[in-house]
Length: 291
Image 1 (cartoon, rainbow, N blue to C red):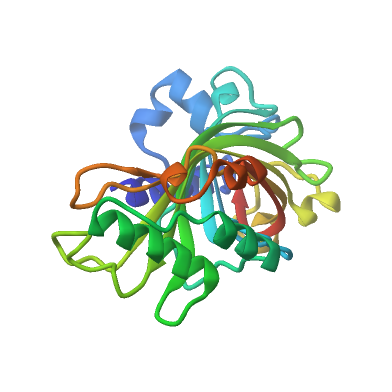
Image 2 (spheres, rainbow, N blue to C red):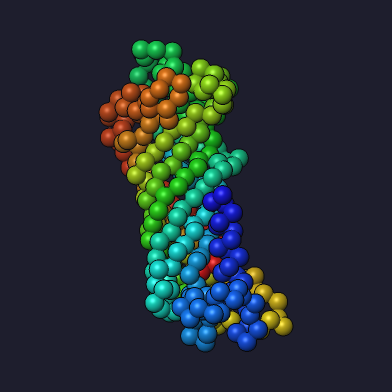
């Protein structure tokens, strides 16, 4: 349901803000309601829309431990549009629903520190299986795998000139990451439905994105266009500089059949957690940006 809403908002933005003013096709409810007309039908001063959407692929060149990678998006609600046509200031919902085919890569130092601080004895078979699945995925042992991540979170967005000077937009976000692990033990010992993934949940992740549109460095036209001309898709290409801080301090293995979340503090000693409490990652994103 939420995916359908995201693409509906995207469609509204393209449809209502790409057409010529004198020949728009919009719902009569909008044209007959002054405030809705102000929100959804642009004029010569309009530089922003109510809704925005980014769908981009993240490349992280150097990874020492956990890092977000692959395709993700931001659904944007521009609150400033309710009283101004000039800029973007609002909220965003950050999402990544599919962990893709990406895999995690860990530095030798990270692996050595994890192995040195790993706790070997557990009270029951489920805790032991979870801990050794985490260890096997990080070590890259045969039969184990550390896969990609999914995530969700919230944030704020700001763009002072969304249609000029590159259309720079700043996104400040916080949320949760889930990193997947698989191995010989991730079966009915964990999940009653026989699921194959074990998830390590990292809360209190923070990220900063500085997004811009290369097209807008050379063309500062507003949201209107001549319908006789095709849509120039280049104006919707966005590039982002990305920074993320992931916290291992309160990481947990998600609840499984044994009925509780298993803290990372039960798997490794405190010295490891102290050293890797905050993990900083940098990257570049590229994809679609509509705002």
